[in-house]
Length: 486
Image 1 (cartoon, rainbow, N blue to C red):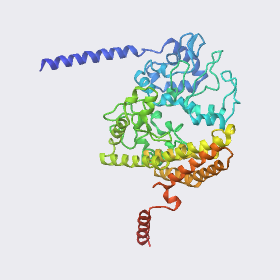
Image 2 (cartoon, rainbow, N blue to C red):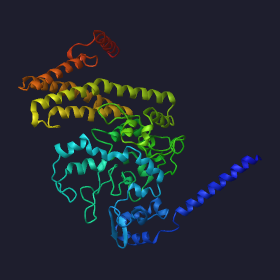
Image 3 (cartoon, rainbow, N blue to C red):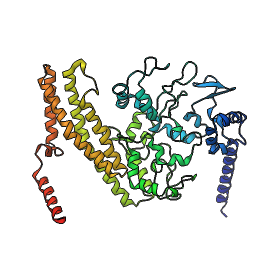
Image 4 (tube, helix red, strand yellow):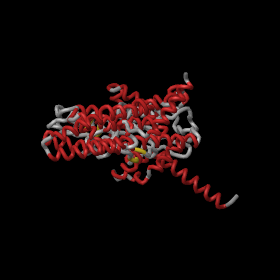
């Protein structure tokens, strides 16, 4: 036998043995005295929590209450409880004591930054248009909007405030928002996906797990998934999904259907599990304008910003070809990219230009009385991109044709021609009739811009100026259809 081969083999065995020995030392041989004390009380006072923990891998690894909840005196959010210093919140930083890789991946992901929504238009609407400052707590003596607390913050997370008595402020707790900012400074909530205290891997892999937040008129991923072939196959063959498998590799442990976790996180034959859910997504379908996912990572200073959109697309294709052939996969992404460009060129780019100019007119006309989101056109444009535009893009990305068409493209067109354009014309007239010369000038600019948009190839049909050749082609197609289906 080759001596070099023997040397390498022996070296591998030594390394493996050392790693195994180190691993054995890290796993407690028995439940700690502190956790035993916790169990002695909580198995009677909170039986459901005790039972959930008893079914978990933590139980079998002798990881108990104290190992997760323990804190040092003086730590933010720490308090004394029956002789032990603990905290209510188990943060990603706490979990990182054992789950280092998962913590690092999550901290570098879009999910960990979800609380950044607090500065967005969505949260401002919840603060002002929907809510008031009526919810007063120690952390918010001047008040905070209950609409934001019970809505936006519960999915996106917020900064958890610790009151003077050491208790968590009720405006910010309970909260399992994905980007929750914890008292220890870490971002995120592992329990947003891994429900405490059993932390079931099967539960985390199911689409409903993501559906708590990824649903509704502006990002209906769970509804889209349910309509898609993927969702149909999943629910018809859930018993074949092998959801409890420790390994759970697509194409090996299951191949019936993917779930959200399959495509965005889970292992394939050539990719490992990742807790950075953005590394297989090229396009960020959230903004009004087209934006690649890595662009946001660069703005946030995340290392994953180096993983470009095309690299992320290649990662997703590796998932797809675990079940589909290359031709099918490539053709799907061509279809999806075409929908993205349609949305951008026909609606998003001209729509935002028109809205910004219309806002200038309104500000000139109303002066100090102008307020954002107090005008009808504010909501019309917001829903065109924030609701219908997102639905069209999300529907196409996940193969849900009804959402792409009737909840997406059709709704955009209906609101554009039936509401948006008429409202723009009303604002033009308002500006022209104003005594404010600046309003007159800006109204003329808006009118010129609207005429340019309506004269473009995408919209000229709506003012009776369609290209005759296009009209003739469509009429010929209708004539052929009528002959075929007499």
